[in-house]
Length: 182
Image (cartoon, rainbow, N blue to C red; front, side, top):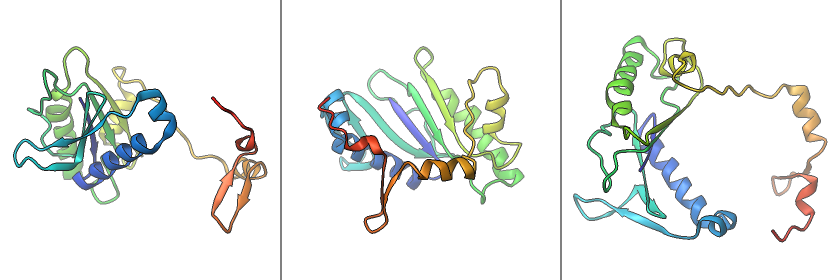
């Protein structure tokens, strides 16, 4: 049971829709994982929902930060994976909003994880030093990986290797033309 959390419910829903689209259209993923994608049905009104789907027996749900995750159980599982994607933006980094997100993150979201199999991933841009992103990055309980923007000179060098078709807005690496049946 995977829960994807973004700043808003609609952003999380978009994330889930893009994931479902990729799983259903990417031929390499289809070959490796199969094609068992099912729409999740809302228990309340019996309608399909854009914010959730099942894939090979795995239930994937998107929610916004601050929304209730606790009590959402699928089968015998509480969420086994929480993916937090950009909980903050330029509009919600006031003291009050940071405190609200921090309280929800620790008291609500992290307490919903399955005790035995639960894992969490937190991805985001550091917009303020007093955020959950910075606290987790500095905690020994979390493994942190930082990605820095590519220096402009290195980017210009990369561009020399690309075949750029401006009319079709396509960039290709030279090895993409090499046939590979596998």
